[in-house]
Length: 314
Image 1: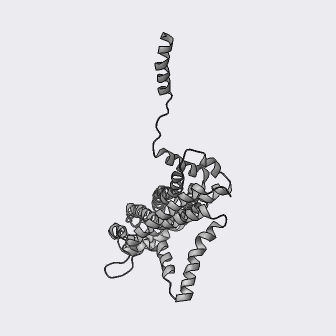
Image 2 (image 1 turned 90 degrees about the vertical axis):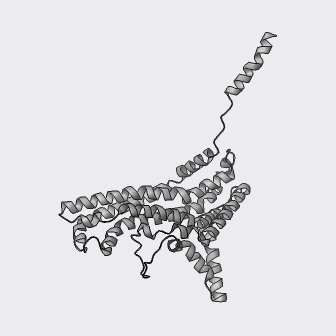
Image 3 (image 1 turned 135 degrees about the vertical axis):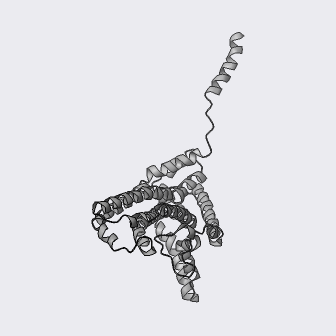
């Protein structure tokens, strides 16, 4: 009797000891994002390679840096400031453009690839929902790539400044023009621009994710040709280009919404250096185009989740 009565509390204690802890709601998403980074090394290798190529070319250009700075007019006027800013701006532009291309091709293959190599059967057997999987894939172009670009560009620009200063001092050049450039403003502008572009291009990436989960082959053609064909039909039939202008605005329109690119006299501002006073976050956030695009991005994501739930391997 005593043995039987003691067995119940012991088994109860054992079951409590081996009970698995509750998993955090964000942990599957975190590990899903890490899986994407493990499986798609181009996400960080391509921007890193672009940074290395730019630094290599910049090191070669240091041979003529003293001659280039001698041609500058006094350092506190706008033209030399723009000329000094060009090297730093081009570095950020190159890495941003590289990340944009990586995001496009990643999105086109994100859901298509797991159906093609039949790994979708394995991942569907894991305790990770379709929503978590699709959100982790969408976070790569919308969150991870902008973070990588900023994390690479800032030290790259600092290294460029140090090397330029050392080259000018070694050749007896004037360092005043170089240090007249407020580099921190350029880096804040880069961070702001990356956030703006991620929000503005969200429907593009989400559309590509949706096509990636639906098309059996030629995902790039299925993603690009239908809107271009509709724009061509509109132009031929009605001699208008509303859809073409809409597509153009979705690619490049963020710059006019997020920045004041003209001064008080209507003169265009050189985009190589945009002061903080010309940022327009309020106007950007109040733009109807931004919120309409985000609504479409949410619709595309919802459709991609539903599609993955019922799609099997090819």
